[in-house]
Image 1 (cartoon, rainbow, N blue to C red):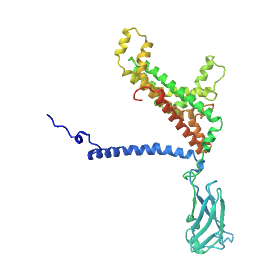
Image 2 (image 1 turned 60 degrees about the vertical axis):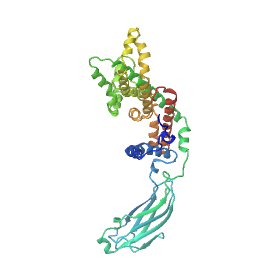
Image 3 (image 1 turned 90 degrees about the horizontal axis):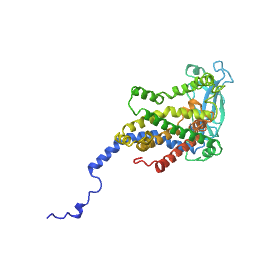
Image 4 (image 1 turned 180 degrees about the horizontal axis):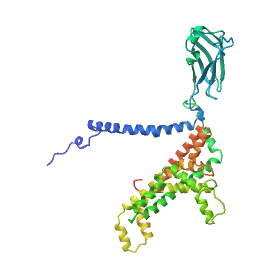
Length: 420
């Protein structure tokens, strides 16, 4: 008869032993480069965008306010001009932010003397010091000090050889913990323009994503069976995706050009239209064209994933369906489609996010004109065309939050596939 095990010995050990702790430290050490890269590339820029979105700043205000000085000699010291003077041109680099406690220091060369001194400045030996006080935004001024040159001055470097040093204190609106405002969001939401841009973005994203999936599914079904030339055809199908975007966009612009494009010439020769059509310059045709370009360019990605999944499906159930007299549509509806729902869901999520963030395709084709202005183009125009980087960051935040809400909706409601 076995002896009963004491209760203390029956319990599993708690906590981590020395070996487990060493393994955990090693695991975190191996993960640290990845975590650091993610933080530097993704998290920190994202936090910076959120920070800027609540700041009323323009593109010119990314640099902190600083006092600026330029030094030059007016008059001819070589000829002993009695009206010669040393000029310091002063300005505040910011038009809005003030700078306090501005001080100017400069080292004069030997032989240069001041015949009269500005009341804000003192000259001790060869060191000039000027207390310039506080500067308001957009401040500009000059300091003029009449000077004379002794013979020793011309034997050494001139006064402009030594750069003057100017210092001051200023609050940078970008890095300060004040000046937070909702002005940027109010500006982008106050008019109907934002909602029209959002509608264009949703049309472009939904139909571009769905079209790429449907066309990719159709292409995968065509190439699921082996036939002569299958490898060449697969390679041709991949061309729109692997080709440089600037090359294919330029090709589409040339093809559909209203004056010299082949598409217009063909349509006019066939009698479809009596005059040239401006495919990328008319509403709503331009939006339809950029959506078709999105479908054509990115269906190969869906085609690759769907074809790989279709070729991994067991063929026995198709043989059984053939014996039962199932039609091709019934085999697709009841056998293939349930097997493809998982990969279709993942592709829809990824393509929706990528298309919602798409900028280069539309910008190269239309520049956002003719009713094709999406949110990403709006970010560019607000930040760089209008020099309002705060409003541009606010639109970027709206894009980020929209994609977060869509992802939550997708995982909670739409996706029922295990593991998604």
